[in-house]
Length: 454
Image (cartoon, rainbow, N blue to C red; front, top):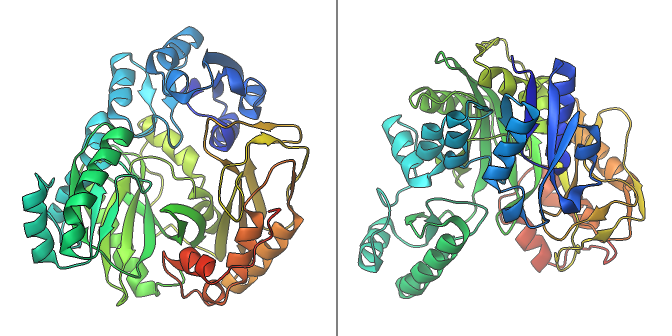
């Protein structure tokens, strides 16, 4: 097992990793920018190293500085968390070349599954259902027009190398293809360093469901069930829950089995998530794979009782899976709300000093956060302040618990999306579990009742 782990991240996920490491008796090293010198992950790690100025490219994305920090402190492993360098194959390769364990998949697995086109090809070989679309990268506008005509409109263009909605365009008629192609290429190149795009049939009212998997280096793979991630705005997840209210037990089992078989065929060995779209008929199609820990992993931890970060560390150390599929049981229902520093009406970022701060508590409530009273929310990084996770015996009880928990949150000095989250939870569609990825969009168009103060 590792002696000392450097955490190449910040905020709540860095704290989350530190907590598990401390329980495992593993020393931790925090890295931080000059803007994060007062951050909690810096305070609670055993050691801390400043790696650069506030801009992420000069600090949290600065590979030479991170490797130097690991060598300086004698860290024998690096945990990348999510975002930043977590799915960067070159970083994983540098770690390997420097004899530092990367707590994640191999560089080869990241290249295979982190690229959406390559991942689609791997899933096709494994027999996982795919949406009709291009067999690889679209070579140009003429090929795009031929593929779109075969697939049928609407279609969606996606960046092969990225996610988060960047490099993604929906096209509903042939006349919009060429402009969308050029725009998506430019966005993809600027965001991910690659202009490569592929095209798929677009589902108008999809649900976004993902499967958490664990895989060891001996070829054993298990899944921990599904998470529903359909409450999104601009392709960014806002609320997640497990199990999905859209799936019956038989469909959930089929989805989990498909994910396990797909991963087993790739030689993948660590924690990962396969994301699927469900269409209006309940058929599921592979969308992409995330080769890292997910922001929303706590809802799966709540219903399974499994520490996914601990599993990730043990798998990276070469430990075999200690679980079989039969031994994994889910209990109750969990919901997670992401609390962001943003205006609840315009969704503009809201950096600044937090002058008052109180988080909810009580039975079945967990809060993962990296902020505190007088903490200064920086404009350089993601706006996530906290994740509120509740667990209860039933979905109805979990909804009541989350509504109560959100009512206890106090964040003063900046704006947050708490009132937006309350309004979504109060909606009839969410309450009945009958919603899709356009729920937030529809509620906003209908005049979702949010308080301007957040």
